[in-house]
Image 1: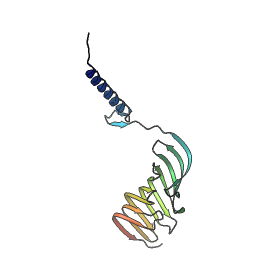
Image 2: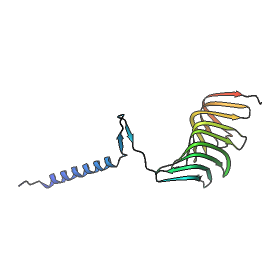
Image 3: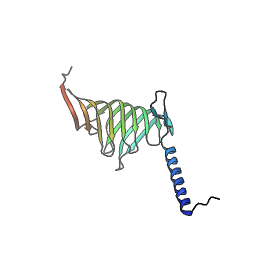
Image 4: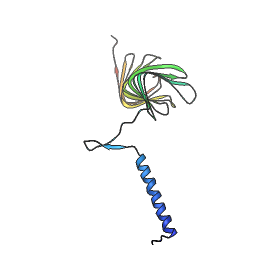
Length: 187
């Protein structure tokens, strides 16, 4: 008959427990599958909710309205909401200061707006227009940011550049690099 000492049983128990924990962690990692091309791809995430005709309002830490969005459709995931064909409004001090349109908006856990695809923003202050492919509205800082190419049209001036930080009403704009200013004659 095989007799195992108490110390050996404890070591075997610890090894088994550690193995079970490791297998459990591996099992609960994001599932991945190998496609026919041999690349590792993540499986599509399952939405929690899918809706048509969305209207949402976002708030900042001070309890003021920060933004409003209206979208044709939206999908809620565990960590974000994705909206399609969106009209958005930015607020400052509880007042509407600009509005825009884009094809897609992602609302993250911090109530930030990630604006994607054909972003157009128009200031209520003086009609300044901002065009870019992707931009982020950072709710806590009350700032717009992008690293993408931007085009800004203000009266008879057009400014192009890469990257931007701006106030929501476009009263203050900082182009990060390659800024080129063109004067356009009124027609």
